[in-house]
Length: 119
Length: 130
Length: 99
Image 1: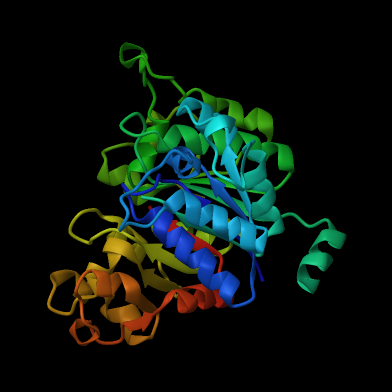
Image 2: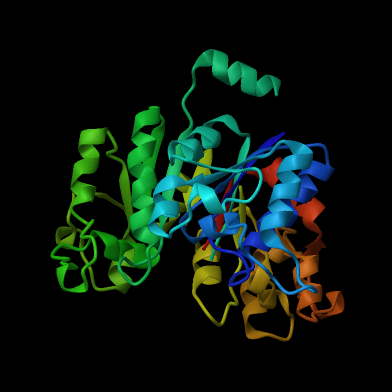
């Protein structure tokens, strides 16, 4: 089955980014496809590679990048939401790209399931 | 995946519902949800909007966020009809709980009871909530 | 359809609103939503109907993170892990998050 995931909250402040990641990893482990993760609203902060969590904590941006690298998942950051919050190409983690909101609607059409995480 | 191929061949349309449960201005959810609604119009899908709980406040007449320096986006709901988005469902119980009536809303809507709202939700292919 | 609630039942009305619209569908409690499943808590009574029909689930890793043992859960609430979450969406989807 083809899954798409929508993330509406930033890393660390809310559990949403963690829940979304664990869901994506579990879907992939079962042999499903996770074609795209779309980062919207404060979710765009997930893409910021300047994050430096403490040594004993998870690195949320790197975790997304590794997932994209291993499984080809398209990590899309909404351009309007990103610009509003100062998230630009020069600070994107590996595997992330900035694009339009149409990418969310498009994947809603193409995927079998859209799963949303937020607060 | 074969189902998907069939769906693409048929050129079928998916039922998208945008569920609005949050009040405007206090947080950005309502505004950014509306931005997705506007984009969705370009995809020729079967789009509907649901307003329930504090989401009904988004449709109140007379909103003016000027003094806050915020975008006054409520009038945009009136423009949805131009995008062929005309299914705006508002839950009667949510209006009543907040002392609101359909006449006080900025745009014509279909007021539905909770049972009907639940049924509408269950009919969707994609539910967008923020 | 699979509904998820991620807030404590004593913090917001999200669980109430979800249950008011649940009809015959399924509910998975995640994040702070899992507190609703604690049998000794007042909110668990609200789950009784759908839980008795096997339509209420709670996410195991979120229970464990919060120190809630499976033996503390209300009758009928089934614990699933993330793989189970994926299966629920696959089998019963679309997903509706009560954010």
